[in-house]
Image (tube, rainbow over all chains, first blue to last red):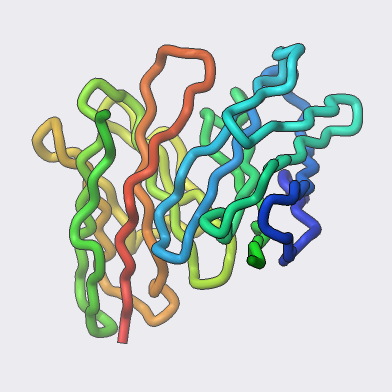
Length: 115
Length: 115
């Protein structure tokens, strides 16, 4: 079974608008963490934001925020005020204590920001 | 800011040849990982390494693969006899054992092309 599901293979967004990237996860652990990474065309993996399963507040990092809905097992990434440099592949990932904290990744969503 | 480094950035090899991919994790980190990303696909876990031994490996990590921390700073992934399907981006990651997020810091990746 897939641990991380990203249902949007690709999205277009207008510059300066917000975009929401969907991520749902599957785990039976009580303690887990959710990550979002950005992968530009150059290939590196850039950490964006983290949400712990016990965190009561949604995580925010600058223009990135994570809409964490624990009961629904979703951890959507919101990018506000999109910039051309946001065009990239975005991966949702989960680490579980029961899994030695290794990361399980989703299939990714390609975001293209239009001027 | 400390970072994970990987060499080479791109390696081209012929099928059947041995390759060694090198990584220098962040110096005070204790846990090390290799991940693989076939072009256009999601990132897949290969192996985790702690206290000089493999702590977990995926089904991808068969007898053709091995990892080593030969000198306390480098962390290497060896593929003994490369196959065409080994062509991928290989990411090294490391993490400490402190902190809230257990964030894994990724290197820039090595693109392996097997011809």
